[in-house]
Structure formats: structure tokens, C-alpha cells
Length: 142
Image (cartoon, rainbow, N blue to C red; front, side):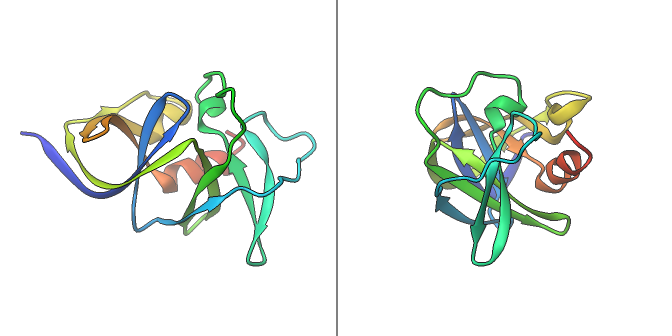
């Protein structure tokens, strides 16, 4: 039996499509100039202030070990969970969709354990992101 996941914000990050539960995606923002964080891992592109709150910007492509796209990041999806707030880079945002499939974890360790897939959406195959797990992973230095 196939699962149906309702209400996921689907966005592209490099060549991949990702989905996050829409209730945890508080907004999509145009990225301002970022402030670099000395000594931060390569997947932390920098930080910016959003209404008085400092948000780290995470590049999923680099976090997953893929080369970043050639164009500069212009947008990000802001995720709000109990553990904190992060912004995930996005090359384009495709909107909210229901996802279908029996997606399992994409790995047993690292960031892969916080991704499931593939799920099918009108735009193609999507890997879902567990926002709480991802933020906890990043807080541990992932």
C-alpha cells in the first residue's frame, strides 16, 4: 500500500527535489547578503537577520556531498521547529503538494537518516526532509 503525505512544500535545491511539511515551513525568503561565519562547515553559507532573529543558511547540496549549483543562491525556505530555526537554500519553490509512495530512509547515518524517499509529486521524485531531525543533526555539528 502506498502512503500519501499531504501538505509538503516542495522545492528544488540543485538537481534534487525536496519536501518539508508545510506547517514547519514558515516562509520562503529572498536571501540578502549573508554574513560569513568563521570556521563554519562548508554547508553553512552564512547567517542573516530576519525580523530580529539570526538564521543560519544551510546548503543541502553541500550537506549531502554534491557540488553546489553554478548560480548564486537567491532564495531559502525557513524552517521553524522546537529546536530552532534554519533556512535551507532553494533554487526554485514549486509549491505545496501531496506526495505519494513508500519512501524509506535514504541512509542510516549522517544527514541521510533525516531524509526519506523517493516520493512522487507532480514535479518528479521528492526526498522528504525531517526538519526536527535535521536541525538536531546540525546542532550536533553535522
